[in-house]
Image 1 (cartoon, rainbow, N blue to C red):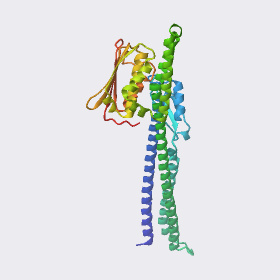
Image 2: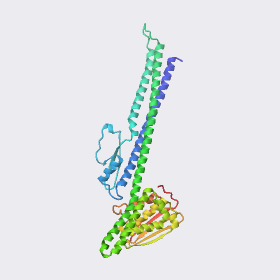
Image 3: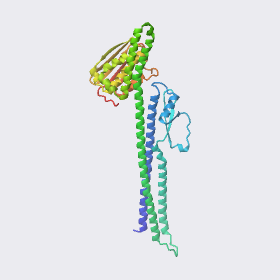
Length: 416
């Protein structure tokens, strides 16, 4: 075969292979970039919703101050979706945004900077441009190889066709080395992108765990210690009226306050050291419930009808037992504070697959189809039930008290 024809064949084959590699690399990089941008938007969206739930009371409308705190917490800019948002040409590929509808305000647009991994988009585009220029150079050289040998050698010229061919071979060798260097750069770019994606995913997971822990701590404080302190405050209010009329009763209630305060302090310490579920398991559900009811009574004239099946309570894990006790405390506190109940029934029993808790009062009741107030109580109870795979049903009518039924699958394993 003619050496020139062989050279042209090799050149054409190299051109096709290189062009296919460049197009495949460009397509892969674009897919990876689109996926990374979508994951960044989804991660930021989840962080936005969790932070809104943390800074906004359950059922309360979201105001401008809450949005500012949310924006600072997640590192984003929040504006009304109707507002015209202009960006510089250089920012068009470095910013992401999504719209969200919140209670009490119009739809908002959340805008944030691209994660570090997505900022490799510019490098990808420059690499793609370099590859295309290299392909154009190879095409030009092939054309020259076809045209130059066909031109007659000038009389007296010392350059032979074989010398020109050897020079072209040197050019092709240089192009092959350049292609190898470009492939190595592409490999390094791919590794950098993968490491950036892994770092971004790890940081997102850590932030989500931090937000979940803050929400859990806030729920525990509201359902446990805050209820105890509220009951303690009511008892102290009743002492003020008894100081002059019945000093003996006033002294007894002050002693009860001191005892309740010491119990709350121990509860805080146990919660900090992570011993609360174990201590509750050793004390028994009925004993812990009775202690909580004595604390919540706060001098009120109220009767409790308690029937607890301890065998049913033993089917619950320590985490389930703690969550169930917190739900019972919150239900009783709501019945006393908002319903003014004088009789509260508490029942726990089991069947083949479930453990059921009933809390029913004879208070004023409320319209269960509407959200009540701006507190966290009902929302916290629903969140605790969902976390341990249970269902919580609330029924109430104005003037007929309230009824809460918690159904816990006995085989549920809670992830604490």
